[in-house]
Each structure stands twice: as structure tokens, then as C-alpha cells.
Image (cartoon, rainbow, N blue to C red):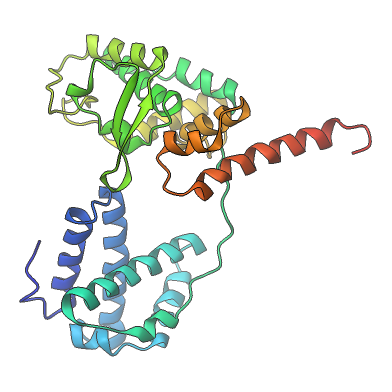
Length: 310
């Protein structure tokens, strides 16, 4: 990580903070990128707001109204942030200031007085069982080569059949196959968990591996792009966009919606909530509880539409 001996300005401290998120806290690359972008924009605003690039001493003397001015600036005009994006930006800034206090001795308790927007809890929007099955069936329909079609089907099957995040599926290595009845995955924060691998999952991965034109080295990525490098999450997101267009699904039918569907459909068929928590790798049961809320809301909707006195 970059030395803080020379971190007299905010830009150096910003770089050191990002290194700590990546190397020490082991946050995902996408999270580090988003946090870094949020704080970089805050520092750019301060340069305009203060009339010069901020140094650490200036950050220590910031007032709550300075931070509120930035939040108001991001809420207005072109590219205005939603409440949820604004809350994430504030969380990034708070993380940066915690780092400054711990590593640089730059404390500013006044900024803790600034509250973010009140957010409504978002319930997951899983796709239906029929839609999930259809998505897997047509995953490779627009692929440019048979091995790409097999790859696309295998990735989506891992998301729905094993409840993996995109990062977890794409984090699999060549040495993880052949997949047995259980699969070890690395989730958020580098935490490992074991998930069962259904025959349909194992078969889809092996079908892809058997036709992949690249050598799947034990230490290399299992899923490859068309040029042989690691498959990008954006390709999976684009794939799902094509799938939902073909099936007429809403925009909420993202790759992550297949993971939500995995949990919701298990719950609907009688799986234990704590077992689902383990399968998904949630630290808190409260996070998994959202799926019970979704399932009950669907049950209530069905009841209201079918009961003669509803």
C-alpha cells in the first residue's frame, strides 16, 4: 500500500485509502471503483468549493454545511444522483474519513452529523420459475460460436442453480473442475463457503469445458472471453439483457435476479431460511429474511386475487 509519509494532500490519501480497500478489506473491484469515483468527485467539488486542491488540513476543518453543499450539488442538475446513489456516495466519503482518522490522524467528527437520504428497503425482484428455466434454455441462442453458447448457458446455470453472484461464478478457476457434488466459492470479503452443485450445474460446466478452445489452466479463469482472457461481468449483463428482450421480461431481470430466484424458489418449495442463508453466504439472517417477505407478498397477492370476498 502507498506510504502515507508523503500523503500531505488529499489525492495521495485517496490513493492509499483505495489500496487499503482493495488489499486489506478485500472489497470487490467494482465496489472499490465506485467508492473511488464517489470520493474523487467529492475532492473535485472541494477544489471548486475551496478555490484550491484540498490538503489534509483543509479536510480536518470542513464543516457539515460543506458536505451538505456537496450532496445538494450532486442531487441537482444533469446526472443528478438518486437517493440510493447519494447514500452510497456519502458512505464512501465516511469510509474515506475513517481511514484519514486511523492512518493520518485527521479527524473530523463534525461530518458525522450529516445524514443521508432516508431509503425505502428494496425487495428482491426474482424472475418466475418458468422464466428462469426459459432463460437458461435460450442463453446461448445468439452466441457467435458453439463454445460461447455453452459458456453462456453454464454461467447463467451457476447463478440460478447454485445461487452465485456474478463475481463468484467468474471467480472460479480451471482447477475447480471437474465439479463434484459440492462447490467451494469465494464470496464478499474473501469469505469461502460450500454450495451444493446440482447435476444440471455440473453438466453445464463440463459441457462448456469440453468445447472451450482455450486451455483451462488450474490457476487461470474457468470462464473465458472470446480472446481467451477472463470473462467480463459486462458480457454476462449484456447476455441477460438479450435474454430478457427475447422473453419479454422487465429490466429487473438482471443476472443478480437469477440469484434472487434461486433463494425465493427454494423458500417456496419449503427450504429452511437458515439453510438459504448459508447457501447465499449472507452474514445476517435479516438479509435473507427479505426473501420470505417476497414470498409472503406473492402469497398475499394470490389470495387477494382468488378469494371470493377479497
